[in-house]
Structures are given as structure tokens and as C-alpha cells.
Image (tube, rainbow, N blue to C red):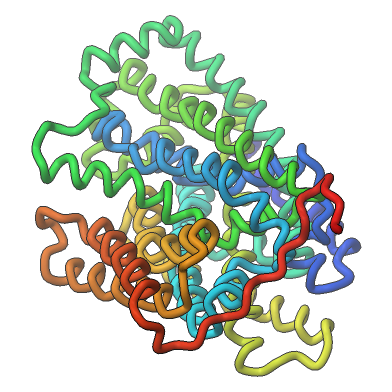
Length: 485
């Protein structure tokens, strides 16, 4: 236990030092927000993968699979990985050519200031649950590796504070460099643990056969309308609701060219989808190695199944490899999700209220917002009773109903107007919130109804007589390799 705890402390110090080293590259707000649009394919792919492969992938998805099987994890990894692939195929190049700082800038240029402000507030709200989930996971890890000596609430505070240090100073450069290094640790650590556990249970085939016999691979819902609607809603919540998010947009805009932006998003999504099944394999293996422990934790806190398996059944070196990988995954996700909403709130809300005198003042304000946001989400994590998986899945409902339709229609439908976008946002939000309070478990999932109302608002609002003045067309850079006449 002492060796493991000292490793965690040493690893934490080194990773923070690396993040602080990245501050040397931050000379402007553009460096801080999108790393100067200069990151190569390998680094962007690493940041795409590392941002998604956080606590929910290691602890949340695996524990949900134990209880509900494959059908219970349709949102993540099936929806989340498809989100990254869809971004690469349909949005990366088009958004990259616009040379924007935040996703909120797109809504401003396409639909005006009101749309920018409303979407930005929705995006910031959506991050609260996601970031809180990472901080909650940090508290859990510190509690486990210290043998209960560090309470979860102090673990959350220590974890959030240390991630804050390098994110606050280094911005996207710190996130990118630490993500790249931590992705290596995640891959090596998880593959090693998978090899060790596979030997304990007699090989992957034994685990797969046992899971199949237990019905864990049943994916599709029952042929009942309500089951089908809720299954579909869970799938699209992360698949579509994650597309208009600042962390995804930052990785697109941080790329050195539009081809890197597209290819890294697609490759990162594919890698994430396949790699997330390693924690699932590890957690389900626990049902063969120690069924009594799994049964006990499923009744109390299923998120502890995998960490408990490692602590009780693995040698110290394997513990070091696992918790090194787990900490890397959580820290990468936490730093990215602290930075993204802070940057977009500063650029698209505060800047509209009080314009900056110079870039230095803008950079200082972004850092101040990162600090305030970290304090806020840490408080939320300390007081939340939701599971990690629930906190992440619920985070994207607001962007699904308010932000996705204006983005998709704005990019691909020339007749989309400012009036249509605002109607889409308002109708999507109002219908979703209404059903969440009046019929949260009714026939229609609230977020699916919100999405349909949002689509209707966009189409009707754009085709009907325009009360609101249109917004001037966006200036878009030519595609790479083309010659302007």
C-alpha cells in the first residue's frame, strides 16, 4: 500500500510539472485556447482519445455493463465514439476553415449574438456534470489507494487542485502535452492489466462465454414502443449532444490543418470504441475471480468493483500500472473539460458584456474563469449522489435539445435563419424541461421530444416570414489545396 501511494504522489508531481512546462508555449489567448492551431496528427488523436477515455470509460461504463449488459451502455461507448466519427466526417473540415476560437463563435457568426449567448450558457451547464464526474473519480482513486486514509471529499479537493494548477497556467498546450504522454500510460497500463487478468480467468474466451451465457450481450431493446424510444434517446444523447461541445471543437481547431482535424477525430473515435472494452473485460472478469465481492459491491457501489479487484487480487506492480493508467485517463479528461467551458464562457459571454482592452487582459480573464469554474464543479462533485456514468450521460441532454440542430442545419441547410435557430433553441429547451418535470419516465424520453421540437422550430422558423433581420454570411477560408481566383 505504501509503495502504491508513493507512486501516486510521485506520478502526480511529475505530471503537474510537465503541464507547467507547457506554459512556455503560451504567448497569447490563441495559444491558451487552441494551442496556436499547430498540433500534429499524433497529438490531436491522443487528445481526442484521452478526453473521452476518462472515469466514465474505466469505472462508469464497466460497472454499468455488470448491471445492465451491453444494452445499458448504448450511450457510451456506442454513442460517444460515433460522435467523434461524425464530427470528423461531417463537421471538422467545415468548422476548421472558419478559423474560430470557440464553438460559440460559430453561432454568433451564423445566427447572431442572442444565439451565441444562449448556446454558450447551455454548453457551460452541460459541462458541470461531466467535470464533476472526473473530480468524483479522483476522490475515489485517492480513497482506494490510501486504504481509506484519504476520505473521498479530500481526494476530490486534492485531485481538482492539482489538475487546476497546470490547466490554469498552460491551457490547451498543457492539456495536449499531458494528454499525449498520459495516453501512452493508459494504453500500456490497460493492456498489461488485461494480460494479467486474462491469465487468471483462463483467457478472454472464458469471460466472453460466461458473459454471453448470462445474457450480457443482449443489445437491442424489447419490441415495445417505449423501450425502443428510450433506447434510441440514450444512443443519440451522447452521439449528437456531444457534437456541439467546446472540447471536441478545441481539438478540431488545435490541429495544424483541416485534414489532421478530420482524420484525428475519426481515428480517436475508433480507438476509443475498441479500447473501452478492456475495462469492461476486466470488470466482468471479477465475477469469475471473486463473485462474492462483485455481488456485495453491486448492492453498494458497483464503481468500486474494478479498483477493488486490482487492490485485492493483483501484485503491487500491477496495481501501479492500473492506477497509473486510471489516473492518466481521469486527469486528461478533467483538464480538458475544465478548460473548454471556461474558454467559451470567457469568449462568448464575458467578452460580449465587457470587451477586452488587449489580448493580455483576455488571457488573464480566461485563467480567472478556469479557477472559478473549478471551484464550482468541485462543490457540485462533493454534494452529488449520482453515479459517474449517470453524471456524464445526463450532461449532454441540454446541448442535444438546444445546440445540435442549429449547428447541423446551419452548416448544411442554406435556408436556416437566425429566427429558425432561436425558435429551435427555445422550443427544444422548453419541451425538454417541461417533460423532465411532468413526465420524466413517460412514453417519450424528454430529450428526444426536445430534439424533435428543436428540428420543428428550425424548419418552421426558417421558412415562415422573417421577423428578425438575417445575419451576414460567414467568411470561410478556401479548402486546402485550392487556388482562389
